[in-house]
Image 1: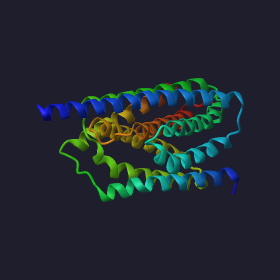
Image 2: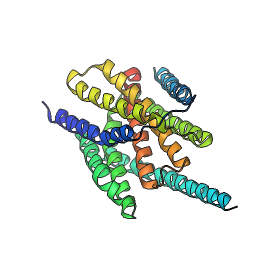
Image 3: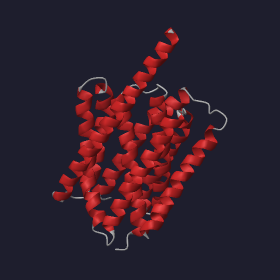
Image 4: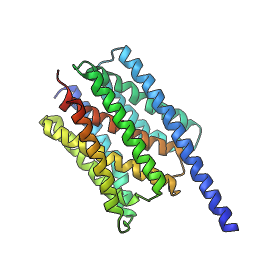
Length: 60
Length: 219
């Protein structure tokens, strides 16, 4: 295993360590979505993905 | 009358946090750009990126939360973002070496700005609370990081594309959550808010760079 792979592995492990408190906090205090919240969020994130596809198309 | 004053005070406080967050975010992004230019000029080797990411994560996880309520927090956030900017230099040099490298880097930069400004504008004007996405973002990020670790060994380009796309989506959700939280009075520390927004912007930029490099880099 190259040293770059070892560094990437360490960085990945630390990222998991950093995300864990966020997950624990969500498990302890889950926030319920109101009606329409998810559809709005999916619509906005869908627009972001469409924009990314447009950027990919623009550099090809 | 009293309730109206309390409401106005809370709005004033929210606006102050939002203003300070945007000011600090602009300053840290500018400082990162300076550090990235410096490392590009110095021709720093590619390994520096991972070293800078690890060092900034250590500072962000263990030092920043302890100093975020004091003036020294400002120094720590500039150190964290400066390190990340310095680490970005060799990555940018690598992409700029591609035949259409300048176009790829420019498009990733402009695309990141449009995504951030669009999401921030929506979260501010709608004043919606997006904290319901916390579980989706936390579990999604864990899956993406596990995928990234697996791809260190598998080296599958398809997996790299899926992970980059997933990270852009999750970081976009995180921007909505963070700004929604500031607007609704949930986040009152502008240093921690800046750190979260900076990381989201940084990750969107890196992922966009990777996607555009894979699909558009004709080297």
